[in-house]
Amino acid sequence: MSASKNVIVVGGGIIGLSTAYFLQKEGHQVTVLDKSGMNGGASYVNAGYITPSHIISLASPGMISKGIKYMFDSSSPFYMKPRLNMDFLKWSWYFNKSSTKSKVEKAMPVIRDINLLSRELYETIKISGELGDFHLEKKGLLMVYQTEKERDHEQFVAQKAAELDLEVAHLDKEGLKKIEPNIEFNAMGAFHYECDRHTTPTQFMDRMAKYLSEVGVTIHKNEEVVDVESKGNKISSVKTHNNIYKADEVVFAAGSWTSQLSKKLKVNLPLQAGKGYRINVESPTNISMPAILMEAKMAVTPMQGFTRFAGTMEFSGINHTIRKERVAAIAAGAERFYKGLKIPEEAMANAQCGLRPVTPDGLPYVGRAQQYQNLIIATGHAMMGWSLGPATGKLITELISDQKLSMDIEPFMPERKF
Image (cartoon, rainbow, N blue to C red; front, side, top):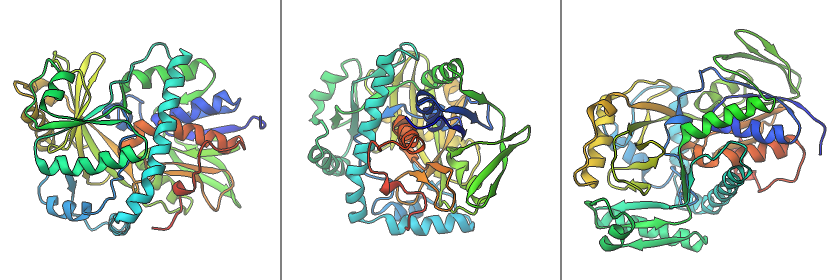
């Protein structure tokens, strides 16, 4: 094992806490800094999926034209708010360049491999019992469709998944009824990705933070990093409103805010915040299977104590403004697929949002910055942040500990060309 290092992790979401978890196991001294109270944001409001099946990156052919089409409909599932912001315009240009068939094909096995690594790590954490008996179910994920167009689209993805040795089955109406007997779907059928898992994120995050505090990781909530100082090619200190911290290694895992932090060091990371929403319904819904409702472009997850309806991708900058029309669109989408379902007004009024960090090519940034020996970037996981938390934490720990990497991280290099 390498010598123990003093590591600062900026960001207390699933990526930051997973990084702290594996670093602590290797004997490093870890301090986590987070500007929030660590009780909201993307790590808390996501659909809770662990998804090896999500092999098609967001930057796929036709997405930009969809974004332009939806640009003037703020209730659409994929919404880009028109704005003359240089970072956004540059990112859009890179996104468009990345949205090619060949790039999507090349990324598929990479996305599968990091997802499978992460799934294995979630299962190892559960078996260890360190976080208590947290919710992790092996029911897979349904991709439910109402039209032949969406069926044909998903048929292509399912075929690619099968070629990559991921377990997937096609269900007709009867098959759907068999797997979800207490629900009447308004749908033609579904693809069942048996390789996927689901969890209850709020439960996992709370237990992970508690466990880390108990084993000696220092967690500072409500402490925003305001400056980062460097000497030559090394970061010398990290400044917050309250303190100055010195460390051997610094990890930027601050989600959508990471590019703002890296700018202080002249490290350019094209990144945009993709806002997602969630509605929690605490009354019984009889839904037992996690499902993506394809035409509605939204996710449904039975969690411990409630059913979560989540969705939308909104590019409107860094803000937590709740657009009521988007919440209403999620509720309406769910009601179109599940006969007799009514989302309570109170649940809609309590909707929350989170900001997912999105790179132009749909692959995360995981690796060392080029011009600093001791800066590691860990962000840009888009809609797979929850799925990829443990794998990212493990890979970063291997980098810091000078160990053999669990997988090749070349495709995730932070300062790659687009």
